[in-house]
Amino acid sequence: MGNTGRQSPIPELVVGVRNLALLSACRDNADAVYFSLDRFSLRARAQEITMDCLGAFVETVAGYGLRSYMAVNTVIYPDDLPELDCVLEAAGNAGVDAIIAYDPAVICAALDRGLRVHISTQANVSNARAAEFYETLGASRVVLSRELSMRQIIEIGQQTSIELEVFVHGAMCQAVSGRCYLSAYLLGRSANCGDCAQPCRWQWTLHDDRGAEVELGGKYLLSARDLCMIEHLPELMDTGVCAFKVEGRLRNASYTATVSGCYREAMDACRDGLYTHEQAQELKKRLEREYNRGFSTGFYFGVPGPDGMGYERDMNASPVRRQAVGVVLNYYPKRCAAAVRLLEQGLTVGDRIIIEGATTYLEQEVKSLIMAGESISAAERGQEVGLGVPDRVRENDRIFKLKRLSALNV
Image (cartoon, rainbow, N blue to C red; front, side, top):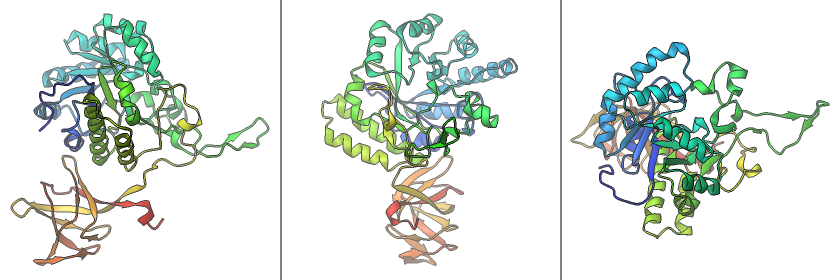
């Protein structure tokens, strides 16, 4: 079951999802989810929720006892206005709980339709006057700029009555509030229209005015570390904000399950006055096993220095990697088993695996393998075997093996 009826004085936990699999992965941890359609989103690759299935998706969210916030947070051009009307009409008909927006065209059109509006972090709201401006327009909540310190957030909260939401975990952009033009300039792919190519994650070199390369101790000169506030939730909860947001709509379901689970556990412990340094460290270790670029506390304790950048490594700093194994062919509920084809590599009893699809997320240990009616301890690449599973899986779901770097031949 979801979190229907949770009564607690702690902020709402808002988790990004892009499909039913990610929704399922966080359903027992989140209070609300945010998502987008296959258009007008800063995550253009999130294509799985369409106008045709929006109603069913929102109904599923509500069935889990969660609230649904739909991001319509790109720049809107004149030719986009007719389609924008269709999108907002569909959102209203589906019963979404709020629209996340920053373009005034979206804000005004959503309010005209009686929809609640949350102002996107793209608006870079960094003071109480700016927050009050959006409140006078009719907005219900502001997602504050990521460039604010804890002290500044407290000050804004003391000077305004509008709901305030802040990010607690996920990717950080090297541009102010994510309004970046580097991708558009280099590749013609606009970050502000959801098509960022992430050139800030590439290797770069710095040269002086005579052409000599400047040694900076790394090659990833623009790549910011991920935000992680798991160690500082008590202080953040004391700011009085109403919601904590987890970024990661394009991450996999394992990431969504782990991150939402860690923050749920931490927030509940804070509520009960039981959160300890030891628990925070253990949760951080769990977070480090999922995809990350190294962690920092962003701007919460001042402007980040070199410790806020990931100069030394390319993308994933996690010691755990997902390795493709194969695909589900069929599911047999009476046997609690699936027929699988091992396309990329074999499986052994005791392996830790993830089974994932558009509507499936399952993490488990391999406890049984069957071939030709007989139990086996290992199966090889190219074989078809029966795999014991604790829950439903679906045809064409993908199977991944989880391996620590020390166990990989890299």
